[in-house]
Length: 296
Image 1: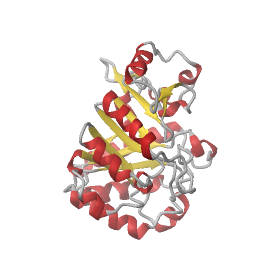
Image 2: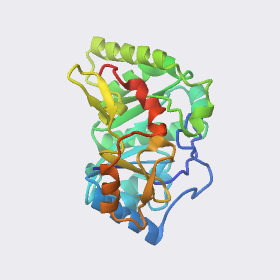
Image 3: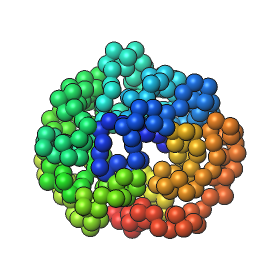
Image 4: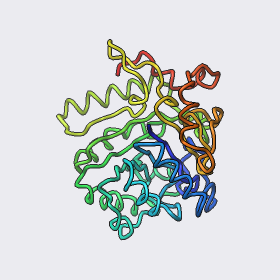
């Protein structure tokens, strides 16, 4: 089983397309002390792997404790803008057990000012190289394609390849949180699919080592004809928000509530999962359905 865990909704970057409604209010949605300990115990008992995000994880006051605790017990993945990253603290972790994905939506200052207005770009580039060097390129970058950066994607690909980054995860703008109110930057899905096809062709033509991934693909079944099908979220994973509340997935907009990691036993949640079949209005209208029957 897998847990998707947003450790905090505190983030200073201010992406207009944020799918979690992150806030610049310090400590927003942040759990600490005994309550945090209970959540971590629940996760390590329930899951074999965890994906940590936010908000910005490195701005959580206890993030290095969280990473140390979980990485000693289960497989850990971390997605970050690098804001708040401390090389000295990070190097004291067994960081080789932590898979890192860095959010990389633009390399142009003028675009950054619009889609990541709170990001210190100079510091971001410095942190990117520090983390990449720590892992000898064995990291991932993630780019969210929207109307503002769609023409920059090939420069991002070149940057990743030239710096030895192992893989690039390509997302469309999720229609959740703050992002759903930014219709001016959300690409039509048909246009996103064309860009994704162009990316794959570009990487192949350049004979790059960079692996391009569609992250949502791993959460959908693949049929014999190699097309994407049924959603697996909720069946093989859960989502935990910063207050410890448990939901079927992060895409359900907190409509499919299952429990509380600070008080509930993992066995109870597993029993709820066994009866879950996506036969809900939330699942029926979920944007993930756009990927059904698409090439895997």
